[in-house]
Image (cartoon, rainbow, N blue to C red; front, side, top):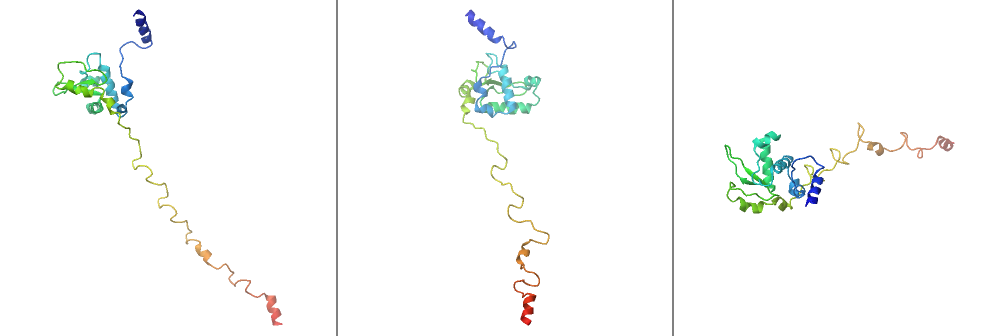
Length: 202
């Protein structure tokens, strides 16, 4: 036993002193975690930070606790909390109410610690809530696509392709080809030469 203690002490000697957050790889590698917003991921760390062996089920997400830790908006906290409940990372054990009763929560990758002040039915619901983030493995991350979809348009001039050709200001040059390619006085092969006319006259 003495040797095992020494090995554990040496293993922890490389980090700063104090406790640490135990966040299993099964939590951060699951499909449900990838669907969380950044505020929800940050709030999950806040819940994990509060857990100390025997208080799972009495974790808080109140403004009084979170604002001193850098949170600025109760609306952001509420949305992040709803995400964590939806995807099975936390479980509500006590429903809070005004003016001064806070909601309590448990992280679902740890066992629920017993307490007499939980709401009725909490232990029955816990059977389904335990590790429920792993039961959402069917969730898929939607691929990002342009708002108009893919392959819906072709890059081309605004008037389309091959609808018209550039023309000169006075029209296409097709008129030039329609004219006869002969001198103004006629075809030289059809007009007798002057020598031929002189010989005929003699």
